[in-house]
Amino acid sequence: MNTRGILVPVVAPTGSGKDTLITYAKSLYPEIVLSISCTTRAPREGEVDGVDYYFLTREAFEARIAEGGLLEWAEYGGNYYGTPKAEIEQALSEGKLIMGDIEVQGVRLISELLPKEEFSTIYIDAGSWEVLSARALSRAPMSEQELLKRKSRYEDEASYKAEATYVVHNPDGHLEVAKEEMKQVVEELLARIAR
Image (cartoon, rainbow, N blue to C red; front, side, top):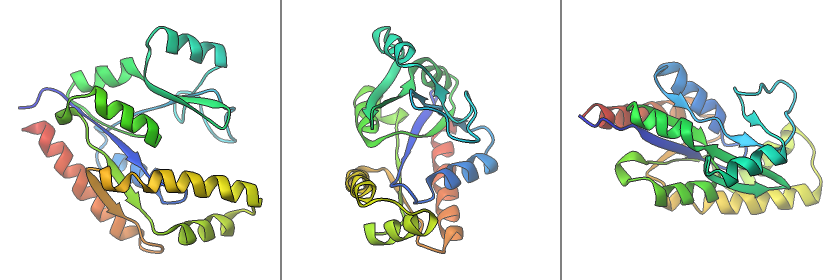
């Protein structure tokens, strides 16, 4: 039996259903531990500290960096984001499956730090830039500059697809297909831990 757990970052462009699918997996398998990232950005309406993110000041975040308290960290849009090291190490030592939304840059760093048997990734493929940008624009208008920033980020995230351990397909209007694929992937990961 594998006594160590597996960290499974879920990588996907904005609007691909990543949060919906992570929440779905957790609802099916409550034993999944959700990785909660730290950030210096302000909470959005409805977000709860310690549930959605750990909201930190820049000074507190930089102190965590200095003391080696983050597994990975990066700066995006003027804000820091990072993965708390102690929580991940604790869950791995307890043989847990840990899932979370971690930026591509962080995923690549973590893949170099953890043993292969303790690390897998899921990429959510929800279609082309044209499909996802149309979906985003239907939800809220955005400036040309914001659209260009999102496109650049989409290209970075989409480039990770070939590196991912698993790919879950979430075509527009077919969430049930994605849920079934996510369920199969999680069952396979849980079986790896139970061996």
